Image (cartoon, rainbow, N blue to C red; front, side, top):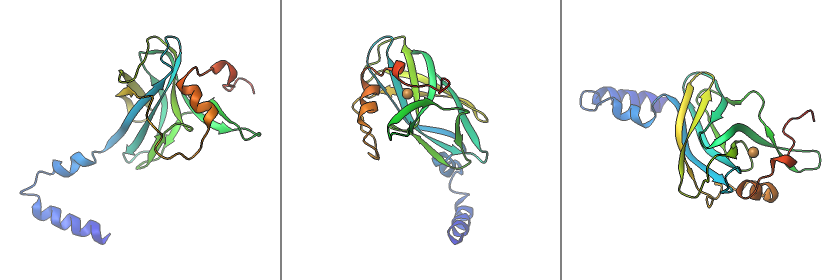
Amino acid sequence: MTFRMSFAAVAAVLSLALPLSAAAEEHPEGMHVHDVYARSNGQEGGSGAVFFMIHNNTATDDRLVAASAPVAQKVELHTHVENADGVMQMVQIEGGIALPAGEMHELARGGDHVMLLGLTQVLKDGDTFPLTLTFEQAGEVTVEAVVDNARKPGAGMMDHSGHGAGHGDGHDHGQMSHGSGG
Ligand SMILES: [Cu+2]
């Protein structure tokens, strides 16, 4: 609080000289989506996954409820859950991803991700495509995703070798249980 007050005091003093937008530009209010990258098996009709960081820099709790991209027939929000045998399985997220006001949420390999199913074009490293995210409150936000299969996850929290390879080459959704009565 002391810091905030002194900052406010300094800001007040400087406000004549310094445009207010200088501070506002660093952390503008809004739904921020950073660091968007995709992995793909590089085959038409294949699959891919998109990862990014969401920063809900608003005063309102929100939810990511849907995603779409022109490069896939179907786009779903997925996560991984551990089954009774300790094996990670991919499942579709019911009801979207909760984004409390002011908080960050990372979609990362081994965790939540946007799944691209039935690619309508080949995605190779360096290719880009628009990804539109639909938030319950913030509405639609379109960002550019870049294909980067070599990207390493930031914090290797879990090894999850079986599935990680799946997203890269030949992710077989036929073997996954996607909440079909199970
Ligand atoms: Cu998936």
